[in-house]
Length: 457
Image 1: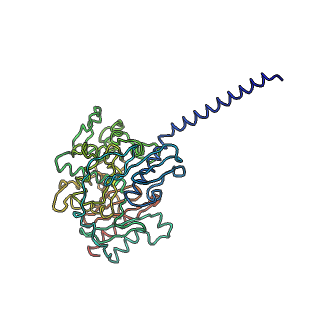
Image 2: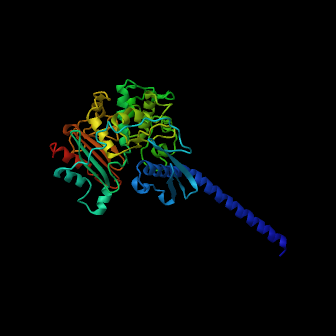
Image 3: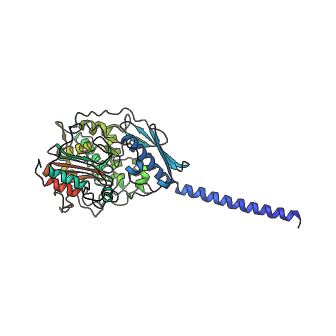
């Protein structure tokens, strides 16, 4: 056989192999760019968690402290200095989170500048430095059960209670923590932050800076969204298209881990329902609300992330409270408030006292009455949701949780965070934990048991 045909065949084979290699590379690159938003969600989640757990909570194991990330086997995550980073095997979809004292952690390519923030003194929170109380026998038994002392070690770990604080008659009467946690450990409230956003709204109403009936909230809302009111955002019946499913690539995870301007992203979404007709749980609604509050309080330019500190944390003396901002400096009022259990308890006591604190009336006198009033909708996925708070009576007057008194209301957060207020028993109960697999976090029974006891045991 002559040399020329062999050479031609070799060239053809090389061309075919090169073509196949190009196809494979294009497929891999195309597949990566198709999957990149999902991967960036995962690395953003990991970077933010690592930053916050390390620098805000002062703990060292982000993977076990907060809800699991499905990409964990493929992630390279580290925290050092004042930042944390995460990527796929140290190569792809890298994200960074930056720590700012008093404001926590924010995802972004570069560290943001948020101006001078309000310093929060301890003095106005009477629970910050009081001694750990000695519990009476009945109270201790109720608290021990809420920690799962009657369970096997495995079931107790699944229950995952990390902290309980009880105020009765305005006095700290019970307190217990899991190993590795104490009264000084900030814990993430997740969606309990939404109830704090409601309190901030009430403060703005009391100051005459906003009204529940205000509409035309964003200049770009020239369609049906112009009729959305502040109350619609609080009740989550704005009708804006949303999906609260915590999964890679959904609106909630895109907002939290991909969008530098969370309110900007949500404000761009269209209506899915007529305003006020459908109640649909939406973290996006709360971040829109806080964008409105940021502007009305006048903090949007000089210190964009400061208004929760200036308007609520400082007056109450919540010195541990950290409400983390997005890349624009907007506090993430849907999800990112960290505070010690005692500071969470003070927030509950503030609600119980109808917005009075240290002699100052910060909320309208009827704000909490309005906040726990549930209205009827054509459809609803949160039957007992009021103005950022959950009520133990629904719109028809039926009791939602029979183990607790009918007048109970509460803040609720992901994986078992609760602050329950019971006016008839002059009671505030804080339960913090990590309970993704627990069927019953035992807080309803705890509240019912404590509410049935006379003050003093």
